[in-house]
Each structure stands twice: as C-alpha cells, then as structure tokens.
Amino acid sequence: MDTTLKNIILVPTDFSEVCNNAMNQAVEAAKFLKNKIALLHVIDKNTKAQLKKDNEGADTIDIKLSQIAEEIRSQHKVEVMTISREGDIFTTIGEVAKDIDANLMYLGTHGKVGMQKLTGSFALKVVTNSPVPVIVVQKRPFEQGYKKIVLPITSDAGPWEKTKWATFIAKNFEAEIHVYQLDIPELKETISIITNHFDKENVKYKTIKSSGGNFSKQVIDYATANLADMIMIMTNPDKSFTKFILGSYDEEMIFNTSQIPVMCINPRKYNWEKIFKI
Picture 1 (cartoon, rainbow, N blue to C red):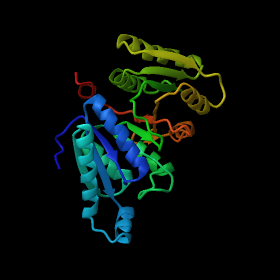
Picture 2: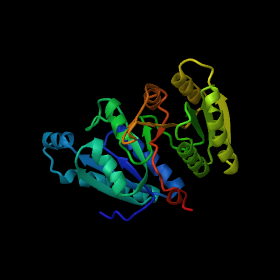
Picture 3: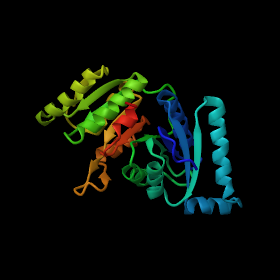
Picture 4: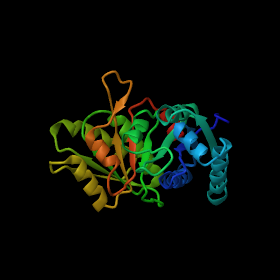
C-alpha cells in the first residue's frame, strides 16, 4: 500500500447501504476538493464471523473493495486506494487516518443493519478517536455538495479550528455559513473572531441567536427549515487533552432525525498549509 499520497478522504466501510451513502458523498467531496479516496475495511471479529457464516475467505474483502474502487474510478474519475487491515474499528480507523495522512473522514452510521453495527456509542467512539474531522452521514443522500452550513457556537472553546474548517468548506463548495449561537455575553468576542475571519476570506455568512430552551433542537429545527446541507460541531477535550468528548446536544445533532450530515471536529494542531495548499 502506498502511504505517500496526500489530500486523502478516508471512508471506512462495512459494505452496508449507509456506508455506501457515505462513500458517495465522499466521492462528490473529493471532486470539489481534488482529493483522493481511501476505502477502508477493518477486519474485526464481526467480519470474521460474517465470512465464516458465508463460507468465504479473507480475500473476499479485498475483492469487494477493488470492485467498488474500480466503479468509482470509471464513473467519477476520482483516484482511489483500498485498504483492509486487521484490528478493531475503534482504534484501527484512527490509526489508518494518521498513517495515510488523511484530511477528512466520512463515516456512515446506521441501526443494526451492517456487518460492524456503526451506531450510537460505537460511531461516537470512532469520531472522538479520530485525528481528522469526521463527517457523519446517515441514509439520506446529499449529492449537490454543501451550500448551507449551520455552525452552532455554544462556548469560546476552539474558535480558530472551527472557523478555519468552516472557511475551508465554504470556499471550496461556495457555501454560506449560518452561525447559530447561544445568546450569552460571553460569546461576543468569539463571534467577533469568527465573523471577522469570514469577512477577511470573503465567506458568505449570517448570524442567528438562540431564543433559549433546547439548543440542539433549535439548531436541528433551524437547519431542517433552512434546508441546510451540513451541521458543523466541535468536540471538547477532557482535562488531560488526550481524548475528546461529546455533549448530549452534540449526540442529538449527530443522529438528527432529518439525517443532515454532521461534521465533527476534534481540536487538534492541523497542518493548515497542507489543507489549504498554501
């Protein structure tokens, strides 16, 4: 496997419908970003059990990955690499993302259908262990890129990372950012930092203040009513900054019933020169 490739979008798959949807969205993003796709299947105990049940060998995984990769190349003219690695989804996916120097990850999450059951706390653990932002998608397809992005702001933690990523996505997809904030005085400086940067980078945006009450519900209702293509949130580091956590409102947004894709950003030291190609 060639791990010298850069500007890669990683797509873990268990070959389920929702993972195929994640792959399709990743391919569309790769076209906009001029990135490559890395398809990954982690061979864990669930895979081995399924292969045994179907009386198939381990090479079945590589064959499936190669077939999907060839379809992507022929239909979309996007460069694809395939990876199968033994391990577990909670640690191996993050390790591969780091090994191949991925920029983004697309993660399909679903109910009990699928070989590896990437649902609920399973998906959240993959998200918080990731060294790169994760765009979590459900079954609903989004095929026209991202034109409206909702950026909820609840604290002054990590405004630079979320602002940079919002700028990156907005400029590449010609999107408008809807900054949805808690209406509290402590956020005045943070909102100023974000909007000043958007002004400098000529990013279209609008700001909306929460009316109080259930913040996650308000964000989802707003995103749904305004036909948003993505919600962008940030995880919070624990006290040691060695792992990341998601609040209950974050989880509600990730698994929103409107099935709007959610980009989850862990506060890391990103190589912005590489990402922005500057």
